[in-house]
View 1 (cartoon, rainbow, N blue to C red):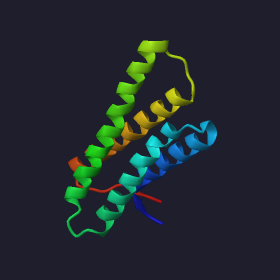
View 2: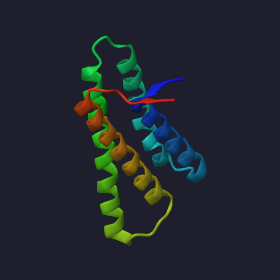
View 3: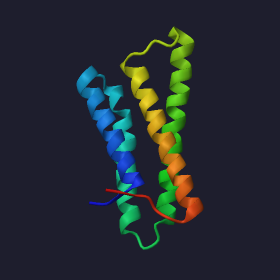
Length: 119
């Protein structure tokens, strides 16, 4: 099965969010899963649309928001308590890294004109 980078990122964020809810019980742990649901829908739209360009740009915007939100949240947490690794900090770091990597792959795809396919 082949999938595009948007769907792969969505699956990672869904696993992070659902795993966070099961491990902590906190409703805010589902935030990465919400980003994952949006990216999953956009990834499917990219695959099925005859003109996927606009969906790719919207997905990149969602990825950018998924990158900036943890940056702001980590700055707030570190300012309040210092860098203490707990479930919330871990989830923010993983979401930041996942969305950051997605944006790098998206930029590479835009530059080369090729889509990354994941098996």
